[in-house]
Length: 300
View (cartoon, rainbow, N blue to C red):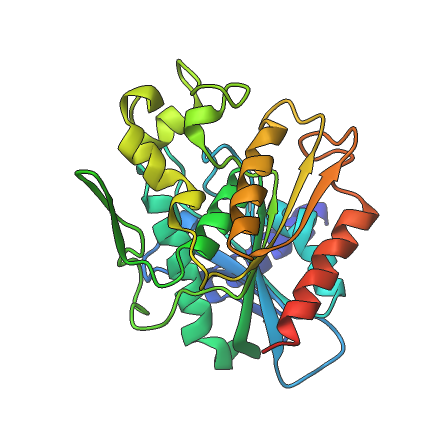
C-alpha cells in the first residue's frame, strides 16, 4: 500500500511540474524564459480572500549567488509573510554563478518581472504594482532591480554590461519594480572585507564576475546598485542585523546613505544583535516589510 501511495504522490508531483497549475491559487514551476531550465522557473501564490486581482511581490533567495533552485526557501522565508498580507507572491529561481557570470543573474530577475507583467491577466495579478524583496545575495539582486529601472546597458570606463538582457519571450514588457525591501544584501564588493577593501581568494563575488574584485574595479562598479541610483527609482527599506558576520553591517549603511541622499530611503532598520537571518528576521521586521509594501501599493 505504501508503494502505491508513494507512486501516486510522484505522479501527482510530475503533473504539477509539467503543467504548473495545482489550483486556482497556486502555480508551480512556470518557466519565465521559454526554455526547459529549472533555474528559469518561478512559482506564483495567491492569497485569500478571493479577489479579481492582487498586487504582487517577487521574492529572491540568498545563496551567495551559488544557488539556482531555492525559490521554495525564498517563499518559506519571506513569501508566506507577504501572502498573509494580501499580496500575490512570486518566488523565482535564477542562474547561479557556476551557470553563468554576471550579469546573467540580474538578466534573469528582469526576465521574471517581464513575464509576470506580460502574463498578469492569466494569474490574477494587478501589474500596476510589482514590489521586490530578497535576502543576502537575493537582497543584492532585488536592490539592483530597483536601481536599474529603465536601464538597458551601462558603461563604466571601457566596460559595458547589458543589465536588461534578452532572456525570455516577453522582452517588450517592462521590468520596472515599484518598491524594494533589501534584507542584508551585499552592495559594494570593493568593500566586503570590513568595509575597507575587497575580499581576496575564492569569494562569492569573485566567482560571480570570474575574476579578482581588486583587479576588476569597473565590473565591481557595475555590480553595485549604488552606481545606478537616480531620483526616478522606487522607495526602499533596508534591513540589516548589527551582528551579521557574513555581510558586513556597513554595507547597508553605505546603501542607506546613498538612497537617502536621493530621497529614496523610507527606512533603514538596524537590528541589535541581528545575525545573517536569525534575530534579524522577526515579527517586527516582517511587519515593517509588509506595511511598507502595502503603503507603496496604495499609491498605484
